Length: 306
Image (tube, rainbow, N blue to C red; front, side, top):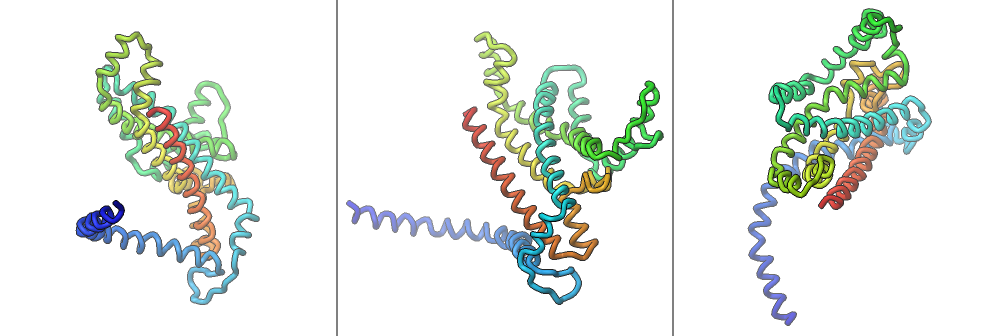
């Protein structure tokens, strides 16, 4: 029996060989681009992280893990990593919790629904750098700031929004949520519009209330959209640079410094390419770990509502 099956297997593999070669030829340009633009720079970055390379001189010395030791002994670099993770996780959770009910509201029959959809979507269209500059004027700690003018108008004292650690972090996260919640609500809206109306009609006949319809129909159908949205939010949050930089310039002090800003500052501005490369290597590892954990959580969510 085995002798009869073996030739058949070899014949099947031989028959599929042209298809496999065709698929390989289609994938070859992608593999080359990935290798040239991603894999080779990653290997070079790791190599430079083990040296004292300054980015200019051709002379460099191998110093082992000294750059990594320096990172873990530098409070400002650890603070940049901590704020980056705080920003990525908090914006992902807050935007997800706000975007889903907003999408459900925009999907309901109401007056001006088209205008409301366009308004919320276009909040995220302008550049993050431009939005950061606009909100910097709104949050200005001076009395000329828009928000402080409003507080003065109702008899309240002005607040140093961007001059204190906690309020500066809060302001960065608030602006990020304000800017992105409409775009992600539009993403969820696309998933809502493909849910068959028959499911809701049948549930209403069975006497299900609004919460039961949401938990048993809407939420399970939105799980793929939640996975896509949270992946985009998490990856975008981990590499954030322009919004905190234009809004707070990383201040006060280094409280709103991001890891991307720290890499640019140490590696380019201070000519410490080896240290910047070590930061980039650790940041890449952190991103991989966070994304793997997120994918596992998403798979568990999909199994829960499958």
